[in-house]
Amino acid sequence: MLSEFRPADAPRLFELLQENFPEEEALYGMRPEAFAKVVRRIYRWDTRLVLGFLRRIGRPTFRFFTIEAGSTIVASTILSFGRKAGYISMVMVDPAYRRRGYARQLLHASAEAARRCGRPYVALDVLEKNATARELYDSEGYLPLRPAAVLVWTPETDRRDRPTRVDPGIRPFQKSDAAALVAVLERATPPEVAEVLPVNPRALNPSGQLDAILTSKTRVWVLDEGSGPVAHVLATVSDVMDSGHLSGPVVSEGADMNRVSNLISTALDWLTAEGATRVVAQLPLAHRAGLAALEGGGFRVAHELRTLYRSSS
Image 1 (cartoon, rainbow, N blue to C red):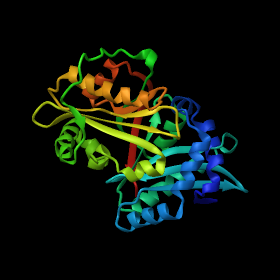
Image 2: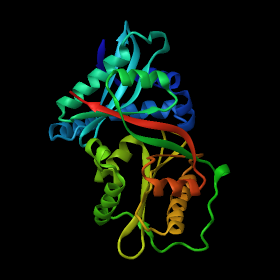
Image 3: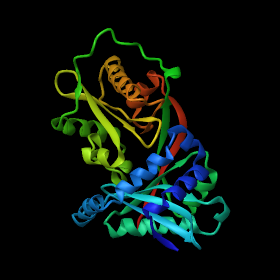
Image 4: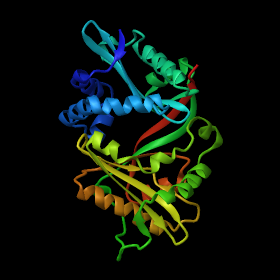
């Protein structure tokens, strides 16, 4: 039976996560107790009130679908909402209940929910090496959109040259920086990708309310070479996982890559000071300057991904 997620389902969801994504779970270092706490906070009455208001004004945030067999949750997925696409994440099925059509049921429910919310597309990420999942998505009409990578940094892989002084061009993000950074991202985004996943300015500086819900901390910096921002990076730590998160760096054409490296170092230093034992980043391979900046700082590719999409109709 298809239904919506309930807070009491959190322990079972964590079990499914470990069964379906053991490599990713080990990389991120999810903490089950903190995860359950965040779930309870998301479904608290005041948070539900805010989420309900956002849905009514046309800015839905997510849907959380589960499938039960008897009284046991055997499959689940999360659907979040971009500007033009519903993004499907964590399609999980209990190994004992696979090959029964549950994953397809979740995909169909997600596509229908996206369509009802006015999103003409649905998209998802799949590991390049996950042939079984790729076969399923191919049979459901999903098409390749872009290659991407998950990269990881640890103190052992650190290759940074420490700057001898603080770079005066590195400063906190300001609201007025958004237009220039969006333009950089749009130039780096192929037209076919922009049609499905247009640049979202809000992603440059998420709201503090999100940090409160997820018990996380976020810091955002830019590199300003004198005439406005030419690079941007966002760093997040959360009680939910051992790893820190670094956004894919936004890097303008012609930016001084040595100074971009200083920007990455600023974020890494903050993340490690906040207790992150490793740092994970994900970005499209088309963003070559950002990828080069990460690899220059000691990030290595942990997983190769492919983003797929199809019509929500």
